[in-house]
Image 1 (spheres, rainbow, N blue to C red):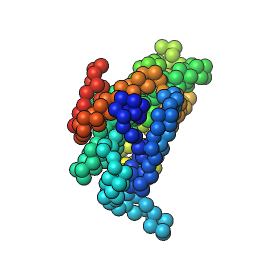
Image 2 (cartoon, rainbow, N blue to C red):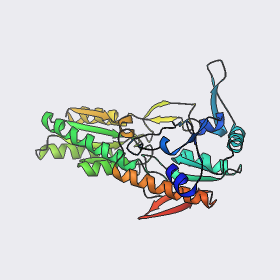
Image 3 (cartoon, rainbow, N blue to C red):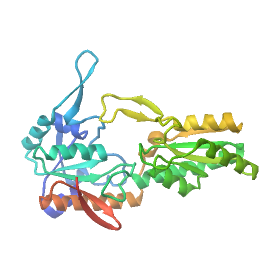
Image 4 (spheres, rainbow, N blue to C red):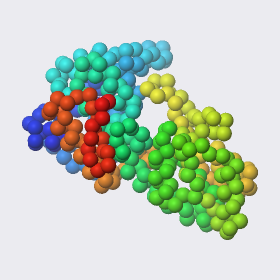
Length: 310
């Protein structure tokens, strides 16, 4: 987007460091053409990011090792206007878009760009980052196949995705997972157990199970790794894969192991698809900014770039 802004529209671009945290604290820097040259092959962001910084509930220590949250959205608005910005392009997931929506009400011109490996944003068929994460999941399953088959084990792979099952579903299908559990479809533990036993009786002495971190326990509760009260979404999911492996081993008597991919899914070199998609989103976002068409998020619907009101 920066190159499009400079080359096609003659605009100046300001990068805000660490997302909304930098907007509140007024930490910004000019982005020139060569600042973004050669970064297409890099994952992540050169500006930094934060999933904790909500200007409307800004978490800070009070000097007594306690976290307090205050509304510092007015500071964010002041920083925006002091920098003489015309538009704010917000790149992120549902938390980012929710905050952006509230900042619009304070008079900031917002354009949203959907970026999350979870692929859970309304208004776009695909978010950029998702395809790369799916590739990593499928490669991990490929590697688990050999050890599962050699040692006659059930291998449970837990993916990210929060409350959406896209990563587990697409990665599991791509790599031939035997059982795929996602939050959107209820499951029965007994059915999983019986399927593993059935495969064993047929001579398939191993199974690959892919489970999304947002899959619930039979009690209806989430398996929560911990809580981070300083974050916009304090719940940190994780552990359903370990729980499931233990259940299978204790009930079936088949050696079972769990692998939690965790943040491995979030790094590395982006796939070609993600690079093209991010470029298309960026070009469209800059076009909207030049037209002062604010309050929308770009997205991919079918093969066309469309906009959706934030």
